[in-house]
Image 1 (cartoon, rainbow, N blue to C red):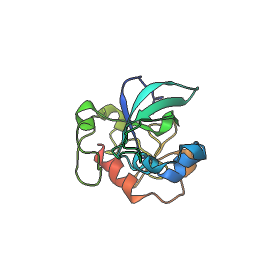
Image 2 (image 1 turned 180 degrees about the vertical axis):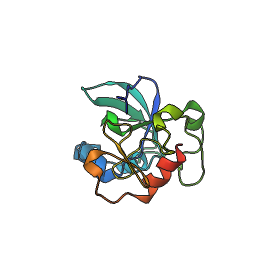
Image 3 (image 1 turned 90 degrees about the vertical axis):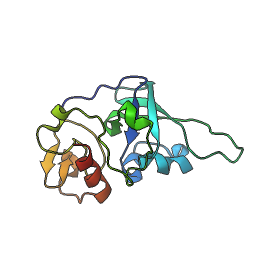
Image 4 (image 1 turned 135 degrees about the horizontal axis):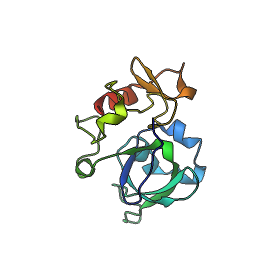
Length: 159
């Protein structure tokens, strides 16, 4: 797998479970919209790098705040959790369980396996050392752990 280069202005999605991402974010980040972010229902636009492996993403929640506004949520996310999406997909409905789409990922990144390089345990994307297993890729730290159904389906869908 190649190192991922994040381009400001491009759209990314987080497919990692909240438990994986919670290790990297402080409690002040956890709000009602974070569940939507971790379920892949909100897309984030890359703003800039904020650290060696951190990217500032800005998400637009679908729900109004108690004051009646839709405040954007900005947070620094580790690069390995950012899954690129195509421009066509960003205009579609974001519920990944309702429909089957092609996410516009290049076929060359799949190495002929039929699965996208998405860890089926923690949701990290295209990191070095990923191992192809029966249900999809796993990163070295996740080998031996049970995969999640949602990430298995998403990895197969991203062919």
